[in-house]
Amino acid sequence: MARASYEPIFQRLREMGTSALIMSGDPSEGKLLYGLGASLLPTGRGYFVQAKHPAILIQTAFAESDLLRELESGMFSLRTGQVASNH
Image (cartoon, rainbow, N blue to C red; front, top):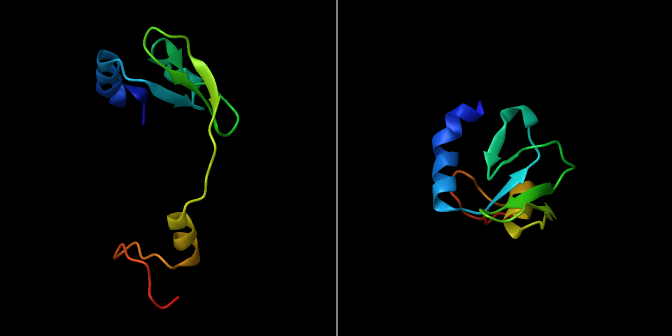
């Protein structure tokens, strides 16, 4: 979906002075927030942007959660939202 579909959202984020992470994305989408647009970055990298501050290149980390392990093992039911008792 083109960025134009989200323009009201980006406009409101700018008005509120919201901090954000701009992760890897299509540079042709143009500037998103505070003069910075998406760029092609390695997995987990992005820019932390704030109004009136320079962007900071960051590295995110993935910490596997108990819920993810339960989903992968089939112990958690997406239908009921409960942990299955037969495991």
